[in-house]
Length: 591
Image (tube, rainbow, N blue to C red; front, top):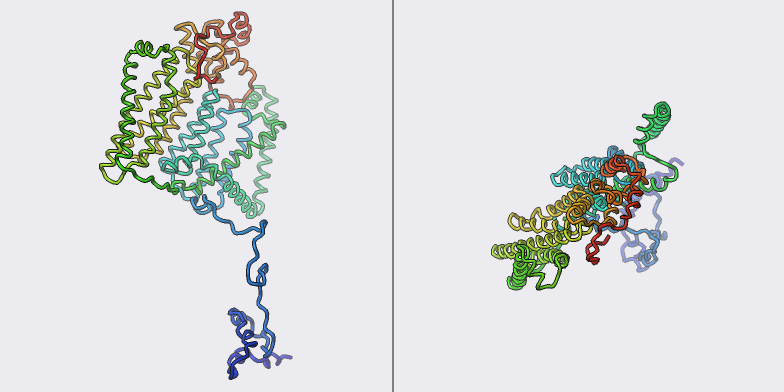
């Protein structure tokens, strides 16, 4: 048996035998040539002891057909439920390579954001938004540093601006400036993570944070799974240590609270009020905080390069084709401004005599038209910059000259619109809608000034400058307290002509309490009655209470808020005392 392998003919010897003379028959030729090219290499790689002798006349082995292949060598059609190769998404071409595993510092900040969101955001908005945003910003910072990204000046500007906008909910009680501030803070945070420069990049970058939600959650899940696989019991130690610390805090905190009433009050004010009934809502807030922080961290590690999206420039037109309409538009603006200068210099009597309009009607009539004229002018400037010739230096000079004159004339239109709004406010008082559209008109004028500056010094920074001006406008709008300004203007208007709409001012927020508190009785009680009722029905903790709300509580408590409703009813002035009923039609006031 031991000599049997030596008697086996070697394949090399068989391959060296001379082929028989004469051609093989057609039936045998496929057998010889039917072997695949990989057969010799496969045979040579096998051990010599395991090789079997080749015998003549043996039937050739059938070719191996891959599983799922049809007899003709064709692949079967894919089934609808068969998972094929995933095609790269459009965002994957704009996003860099997959970032490394989420770091421990980033993961801890993400978990802190989720826990704080569940504990602090359930009772309302105040300083809690800023508290929750800090660990989320740190998570993005650690993820960016781990990915090798450097902190650039504009990134710092967007980040600081976003955190500054979250100061508005901590200071003001009104909901509408708070909403604008929160939305703008999210947009600036997204810009800080993406670092866009161009018009399209700034626009999409302010919304691009939402494109990382799915990838961020998957990235975080992979990081947790890898850590659980490599921890070898370390996570169990962390969980046990945390559980022991929590138990100690609860036990000794309860003992100290029962021993001292002052300590119990302090602990009750600082600790979040968590109940079983709020579990679904707080679970939702936990998920929102977790997903948001993961999306921010993933974007910081692998931002989408929105500036890589190229927009094909428009086909340049001839000088006459684009310049003549703009010159005609400039002449029309100049004619309108000439009339407006006459009005602004004191020619109201002549204008009202020719138009048969009252003082307030003339002021009210044209504001919306002038606002739309400003918006359309910005659209005309954008189209002109896209279609104007830009090859020669003389073409660029002509473009700057014509558009510069149009911007300057439009600034006069903005001033005329604001003057009309001022006249209308003097006649009917200030409201939320009136101050909002006036703020928008002021910001549009600022954008026109930035366009003029860009025409002189270059437009490289113009997209980011416009975005920064919008953020500054929202921040300023929130810090000046719109409801407080509305109350102050209406109080001053009452002092001048003894006319005030109590039904409107009593629906303002707690920001208006300091100004309304200066009204004489019984108007003061009627103006503050609804605000006082709203504050007494609210039991929000310190982190969900604004500074204006706390100040309003102190003012009402000092003046005695319990008798407001009684004094107002006794005076019989609760139904719009002193309201101006001369002109019931008011298209500005949507409230």
